[in-house]
Length: 81
Image 1 (tube, helix red, strand yellow):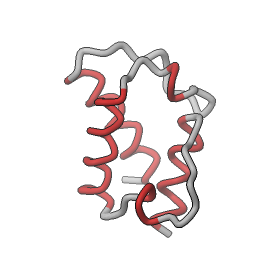
Image 2 (spheres, rainbow, N blue to C red; image 1 turned 60 degrees about the vertical axis):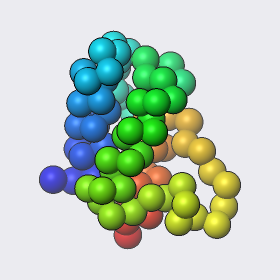
Image 3 (spheres, rainbow, N blue to C red; image 1 turned 120 degrees about the vertical axis):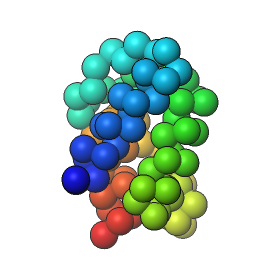
């Protein structure tokens, strides 16, 4: 399973569990407009760290916060490389 499909799967799973409605999951989807809240994102980041073995938010020396889903996926892809 690719990093992109794992990330998308976690977004969908957490949305179902937290009873949130996703506005869509295109690469251009702005994370703040996705329908998820900060708790959802915390759950997603924790689960991705478990599944992928990396947390790019703590592994990076630069302060960077992805804006879109595409940015978020690339952030994980770059950190896992």
